Length: 213
Ligand code: DX5
Ligand code: ZN
Image (cartoon, rainbow, N blue to C red; front, side, top):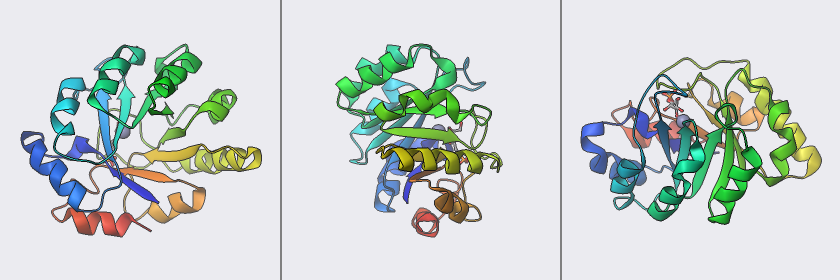
């Protein structure tokens, strides 16, 4: 199980210190939540901030775009040097095209789905996806409660992936903490995002160790 701490719960006034510390604490990836204030009711950061922190860590950057028109940012993100990009199924029309545009840039392509979105909506594109990001809270904010019915979606998706021999990974995001990490592992999650359960704790190394099962 890989742990991707979400920068959303970090101290935004000290980003350099925060990313250096999280790398030393054993994070596998750094999850970066881009929000546009339209697709989700919150604004976070865009490419300039991602670029500014890129020079302070070697961690792979896992970009979670909660924005309309995600294709607009791909070439800038490629220049920054990011390793994974997911965009929302609900925020885009030509998903196959966007996936191809991400993969052409030698970046792993993922599609994110809200709790209320069925995995049937993404089944046709599973063969070309590197990963699926299943939201276990409604996107927009850190520190929300885990929505338990999303575990069934993780299990169902895992079965489809295994039955078809796909290489698609499953990432889960929202409300993940020590109490539910085992359930996620059992359901078939490969990567778990944790914001408040890591950046919200004083000892980040201990917080990551607890989640790495
Ligand atoms: C929510 C974001 C998450 C968020 C998770 O919209 O996509 O990545 O930072 O935060 P926690 O782990 O606190 O729920
Ligand atoms: Zn996220």
